[in-house]
Amino acid sequence: MTLKPLACTLIAVSLLSACSTAPKEEKKPTTPIIFTEPDITPPFYALNPFNYDAPPPFEIALKQAAAQPVTKMEVNLQSDPSKKVTLDVNKLIIPTVNSNTRNLKFAVLAGENEIDITEIDDFLQLVEGKARHYPPRFTERQERKGFEAKLKELTQQLDTLASRDNASFDVLIRAFKASVMARNLDLGSVYTTKSLTYAQRILKINKEDAEANFWFGFGLSEGGGQREAIPYLDKAMQAGVQEAYLSAANNYIAMEQKKNAIQTLKNYKVKYPQEAEVADRLIAEIEKQGRWNVWQIIAPAQATPATPATPATPATPATPAP
Image (cartoon, rainbow, N blue to C red; front, side):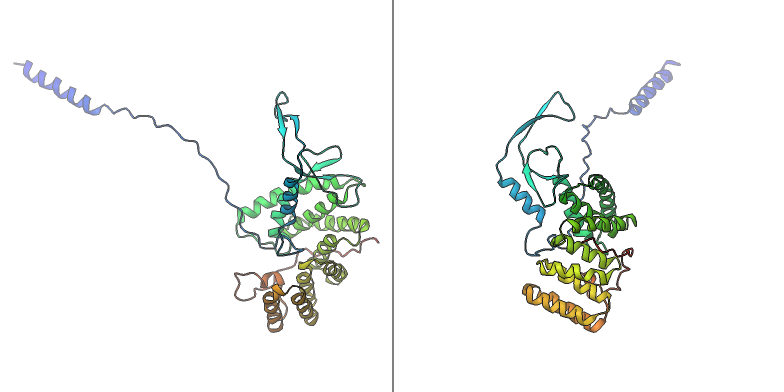
């Protein structure tokens, strides 16, 4: 009498246990997560201030290096000295001391009192496109933070090399430009002092250097020393630095000398007829609106001039030693 209900109970339990048994999941092969850095946004400022129609100097140097014969060299791998690696690509090499002229050479490895400047020049070019002038131009906040962090590291490296009394001209000009851009990025007032010191040392070596006069001229202007900037920007214009005309016009605008600013832009249009549209636009806006910042006006995304930005931390103008 009791066997039948018991049998039914056992069958029911077996069915329930069968239903409750979870199926085994097959393990899917895991694929590694690869982080890809976002592309750097396009530059705002022209990468070749000497000639807007020419490639950037860094790219020209890379092409020259690639065109030169390569002397291969086998060296020990730094990460594992027991292994060797063959160097077969020319790099950009500069002297670190005892050289008062630009002395770029191409080799697979830097020698004594030399440094491979390839990566440094590559990064400086990227920063120039964003922060050669004030205000710096970034559309992505994280990108700016990345540039700031890297530039701090780079200035420390260049400052160490430039601290020597016999530091080369090539080292000094890079330390100078890096300091100007660090100031433009508001990384600290110390960079204003450093940039002035480097400019004095550079112009003491060669007071006619076009690049040094250009950078020192607009650096003084954008830091508050507009009157002191005039002779340096004039030298840069005479030496054929295209962007020096725009910096000079910007300098006169800051001094509220509208006539001089307009005349400078007219001269710019004559010298560079391909820039006539830009010059005419700037002249019209100066005449109608009064005082504006050149770099804001020529921004392609702006239909109307923006309120002028606050200048970079004013510098105490210093006249380089003759």
